[in-house]
Length: 273
DNA sequence: AGCCAGGTTTGTA
DNA sequence: TACAAACATGGC
Figure 1 (cartoon, rainbow, N blue to C red):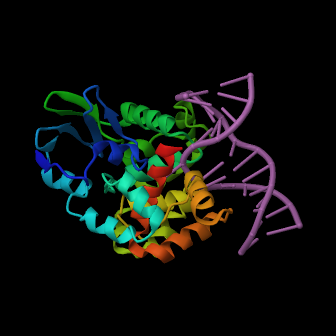
Figure 2: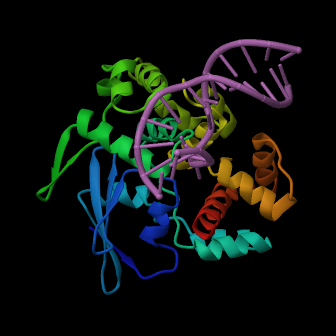
């Protein structure tokens, strides 16, 4: 169990609804039930702030990025007028450190897809292929292992409603099970790790950047999707630019804070439009 | 009813 | 290298 004192810089709604993660449930009382790998936790409000009910404090402390100083990050980003506004709006966000394989599969599924549907697909896959787990009487499924996913073929994933992504998922799961070294990316530079990820089926520039940011905490990345394109058009330049150049534009300005900037801008745009 | 989604792949010049 | 079309599905 982890206790978090009331602070501006931890808000479950912002953290889980900001688009970085797809495996969580909101409960009627406003609690968040979260899943990562084969673990679960319940985040609930308390008089002093929040309680993280979980079996492994050290794991969730890292997962929730509790040892990073977000006040400092926001102060630095706030030199830019729009980012000051966006960061103020999303100040409760924390960039999760998610499981690499789960993040990889999740963001392949995310391509050209709606967030509610992505969540549904990942839940279905977990229910079908994930191992049963139990925490304090709460039954749930782990995210499927690479092995479990590699045992299924394209046809299976099509039957699960993955559409044309079925092939990418089948191929990439087999690659990882066959020894493609996800863990090895930790020790690579952002640029090198990105290049490696791009060799996987279904992983293009945007998905690679999301994996680097949300699983490896490589914050010198700036994933560009349709929403961020709108942000750039509406607030920065008044014209469209290729995704690669938009990404470059923000990384030049914000360096290793670019990833945080991206999340604040994404959340701001998506919630306010 | 139709648009569109946290894009990638494939084909073409 | 750069750009366009094709791509499955279902939530809204």
